[in-house]
Length: 127
Image 1 (cartoon, one colour):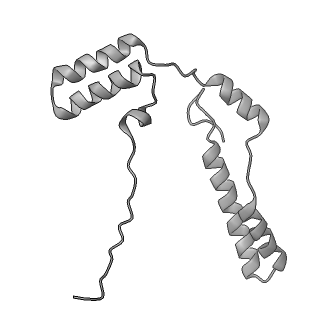
Image 2 (cartoon, one colour):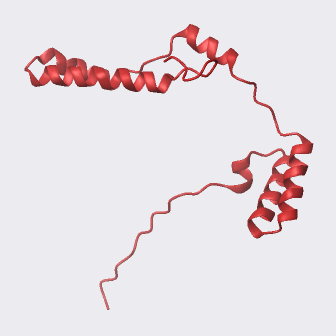
Image 3 (cartoon, one colour):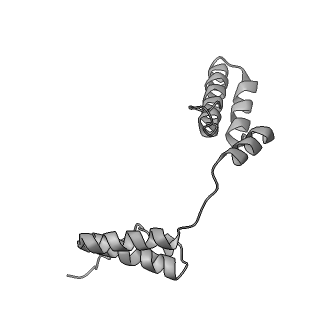
């Protein structure tokens, strides 16, 4: 879980996946050898959640930078640059950022998100 760089965030996801993978391999190997307790432990491991130790979580939360909102100057610079470039995509980004800033909306509320639409074809029995 040690950070990749000095002062970086702990690699919690990597530590969890390595721990879970190694335990799973060992327990499944033990189950293949005919040890029934290993199979039971493998099933327990599937439902188990691994948590980050509290001191590591607190240290990481205090070390990460604070989230800051967009300032008016930043929003104005993005809008001006989008209008200066003039392409359709750049103008839509400028409009989206202006709406997001002025209406205090989240980005997903302004531009939306992609959804997969399941299309079902109806087959008619008669031709």
